[in-house]
Length: 204
Ligand code: GAR
Image 1 (cartoon, protein in one colour):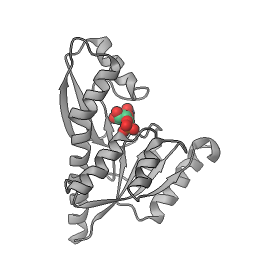
Image 2 (spheres, helix red, strand yellow):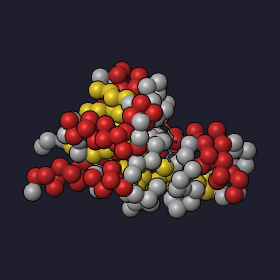
Image 3 (spheres, helix red, strand yellow):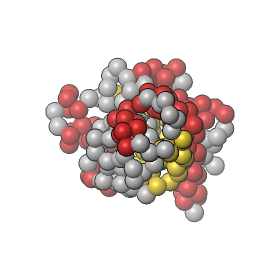
């Protein structure tokens, strides 16, 4: 059976991208293949991870495009050129407009480092999410994979995993544990679920 063609979009270190690459090698992801990594920063370490895995990369900044619209047009052109079936936002920290999310409805998924609907939406990304969880004093946090629509972190939830907060946690220790215990597990699992759905629908 043909595999779903996956593009992973990144902005930074790319540990979630690495988890996806490793899951592809170990067979956890078997219905899809990562064929493209897109970054909105030319210096993201995630690009090195992609190159080491022999995956095609494309990087472009919003600044060099001049506007959100032409930035998104450049992304769409690249995604269409590669016939992408599934887009995975793995630490992609730029918000996408409705015209973009509508074009790929139910074909974009995102990993967010909290249990949505807590600590999510515009302004909640990276360490800020964990700072907010610790500030609120919640005892349990976690990660969520969801479909992406025009509402930041507002699309249908696919998978979630809880992580207990420890008394001495800092935003950094909590971020690391949420990644290890939740993100790096549920993102590959969701990638497989969505890839399988896509190829099954194609076969009908
Ligand atoms: C991850 O923790 C991811 O959940 C988060 O950014 C980090 C990227 O790390 N994403 C968001 O906060 C999205 N709102 P990585 O580059 O090492 O995968």
